[in-house]
Length: 210
Image 1 (cartoon, helix red, strand yellow):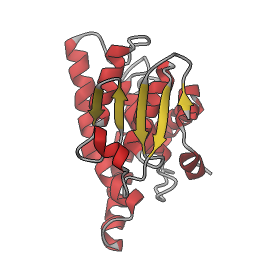
Image 2 (tube, rainbow, N blue to C red):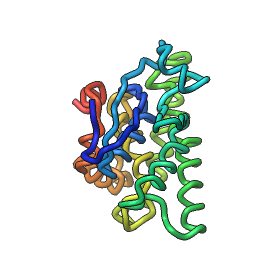
Image 3 (cartoon, rainbow, N blue to C red):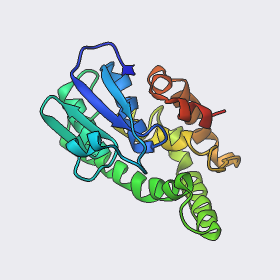
Image 4 (tube, rainbow, N blue to C red):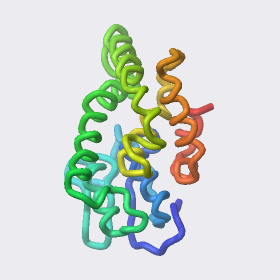
C-alpha cells in the first residue's frame, strides 16, 4: 500500500487502528510523500519490525539505513526531509509552542483515549477516562473559534496530532453535543473533509467513522 505521489525509499510500519500511526500517515499524505505501508498488529509485532525497532512499537519509519520510532520524532524528521509544505513554524518560539501543544494533547487527550481504544482497565476506569476526555475537549472547544486551525491560521503538525484523536471519539462513545463545543465540531468537519485526512485513513479507521 502506498501513500502520496513522490518517489521515496521509505517504509512505515503502522497499526491501522493506532492514533499515533494515523498522525504520521496524515502528515505523509499532507506532504504527498510516497511510502510502503506495512500493517502491524501492535499486540503481536512481527520479527521484521523488531529488526528496525528494539521496542517493537508503532509507528516505525525506515528510510534507507535510518530507523526511527516515536511518532513525534518521525514527524519532525519528515518535516525537515520534505520541507514543502512546512508543518512546523519557522520561528523558535512558535516551534516551541507547537511542541508544547503536542505534549499537552498527549497528556490530556491521548492518555484518556488510549485505554478506551484498547479496552484497558475496569469499566469504571474507562467510564472515568471517557468523562475526563469529554470534559477536557469541551473546555478547550472555544479556542477553535479563534482560528481556522489549531491555534494557527495555517495547517500545522499539531493538526496532524489532533485530527486522529477527534476521529476516534465516535468509536469510543464520546459525543460532544453541548453548545460550547460547536467550534470544535466545525473544526472536526473541516479536518475530516481534508484530502490528506481522507487519504490517511486505513480501512479499520474508515469503519470507525461509520
